[in-house]
Image (cartoon, rainbow, N blue to C red):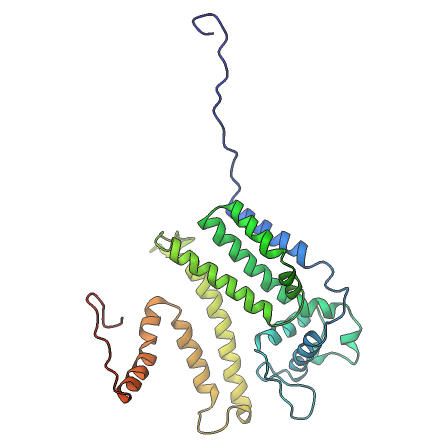
Length: 301
């Protein structure tokens, strides 16, 4: 009661609702994208010319057990007009849904609707990865409301939906571009913030953060490829590049390891010395003076 005898009124303070965790909303982004893009991908046949054409090249990979060379099913006719990643995605997708073992039995590619699922699903996952990175970037730099609006605009674009539900090289390229731009914007606008460690290793409390997770995933992928290439060209050196170039079993895994090391900041500063030296030789040949080192720059920069 107040001094005048009238009852006290309730305060008008606004209580903010509890905010959902970023991880939960990221999971919602993935689930909603799956619900929009996945249903119905087995109900329409492979679209000619890209899905049928590229799918046959991927089936030949499984038939030949050869993940290096892309072949068309005619005598000695290769297929080199598209990057190999999409054929890896198709072949892996077919094996993931249980079809195409050793190329599949006669008629399997026209018998099961799982053929369409296996061929198209990896490309849908690429699209979802790009949308998720875009949402994460907008949520961190602007607001979650803007992130959901961006997901709605990009994810509902007709051409994006059509390309995402077809097995063609456009979507991996678009998804990688969206992801790269999102990570670049994060580095530019939020790069000064310290990275929180996920956990600590050993008794010395060595921090382990998201960068190490990324390096582990990329390193595992690159390592598997390097080992496969080494064994592949050791067993079949006649399939390597002709001429004076050494066997790829020697230099290709080494090159992949060096490029992977270049992902690290210091590794890149050292690795780029090679093209800098080559550029210096070219500049010397054409008699162009090299720029002097600026104040504060180290010998690596």
